[in-house]
Image (tube, rainbow, N blue to C red; front, side):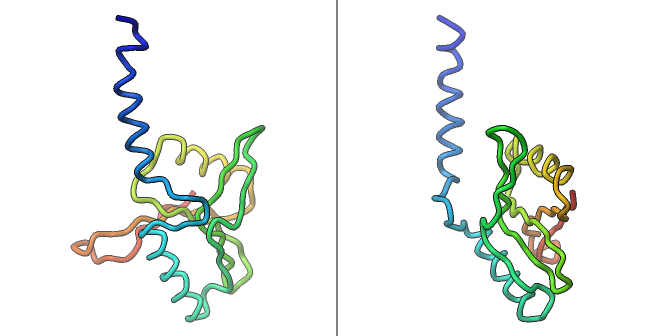
Length: 126
């Protein structure tokens, strides 16, 4: 049996798992919808001036791009890029770190905090 044949079931399983979490471009998952509501509340409170889901596409290298989940303009006029995560794929953490080195925006990743931990959003800055 070839090495390629040995690893074929693993590749199919991984592709099947990835396919479950993929939505059409411009369509939010439940966690992103919850974060959009959070941003809307911040906008009503005067802390956020504007936000857009998948509104920015950043070039990292030839044929390599990063599209943050939300582009956010704070009331101060500062721009931030927000990434909403349930869990990290291998390349996603690398892309946000590279983008943070290349572009003059604040990059943050947010993750839902468990209710037992007080709820809300855990924030990681890059």
